[in-house]
Length: 317
Image (cartoon, rainbow, N blue to C red; front, side, top):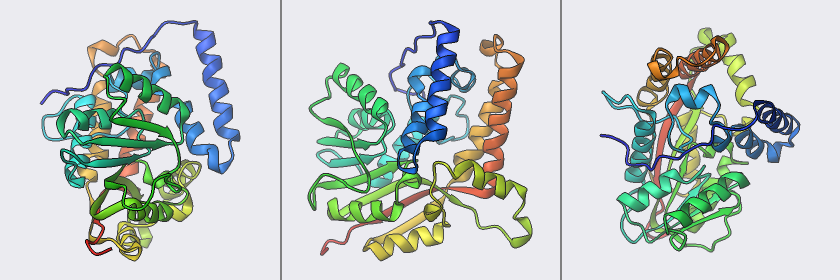
């Protein structure tokens, strides 16, 4: 099934030196950011709106502003389609339905929110995000789609939600909860703002439990790579993830490994795209960059799990 997401036109013009300088400035901000500002600066560094000239966008074949790995069913050969499928899986898991009030925390550019408005028709979606440029872009797109009255996108924190108890039917976090300071505080806030019977659903990253003999250099490299944007206190296996949800008060808790539909096929897609006719203009250096990226994702699947977590607030809570 082809993606129904509206294509986002990225301006590929501009002075290469100016673009390179802007990228360098964002990189310095990221490397020097305080722990609390690091996640926002990371996504500023990887701003999809500014990646029109990048190998990343060209190789993956991105025409949308989704910021996720995608859900890869058999026969899927389009990254935007996979990203939309992942959003649909999360909407289905959360049970987003017509008339619902939804809180989306860490919403990226809100592509999934616009998708849910088209396909599930909730009454409203409120989004909180610490990356200001993403919020601004999402707001502009909501205005263009005439959805500003129903898609309310704000700069805000997952651990300090500015709404009272029982404000939402569904709370979702698509590949974002691992960044929160802390994820446990987010669980508590989600429980507080959910109505009785409401559902929390997340797609998230957790460590894969490996036998002692398989804890290799790759594990240490992975720790170094994720350490700047994922707090160590958030890095626990899915069994602990489920326990923490139950300790918060949630019931009907399920945390399931879905890596075989996400990380591995995304890496295979990236590798296959390196031979596509429409990217032959890329330099050898850019190709090496993207091959390294595909290999990184494949190796990441060895030491990480990509999980779908679903939990419900009791009716009598």
